[in-house]
Length: 80
Image 1 (spheres, rainbow, N blue to C red):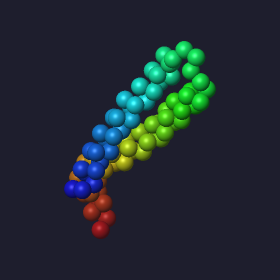
Image 2 (image 1 turned 90 degrees about the vertical axis):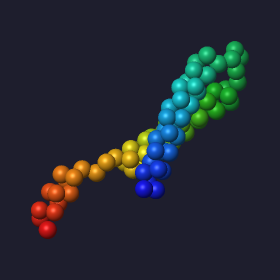
Image 3 (image 1 turned 180 degrees about the horizontal axis):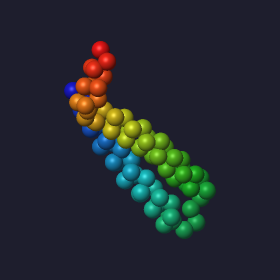
Image 4 (image 1 turned 45 degrees about the vertical axis):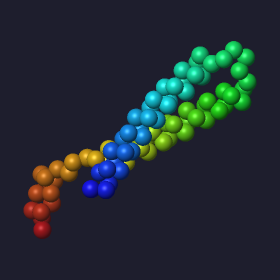
């Protein structure tokens, strides 16, 4: 039960990561005129971190909220 709640929380954080990714891309493209290269590198670093965290959140969120198949359990019990 706890993993399922944590899984849904991870899926929510994954959705927030996707929205953050979109916002950072738009900020990088539109940007301010004459922005420094440091600011550009900060946006690129934020985009990379968002991609990594989004991947982890969606991976474990979908793994922990997935319903187990009864057919698979029945197949495993045949051999025992």
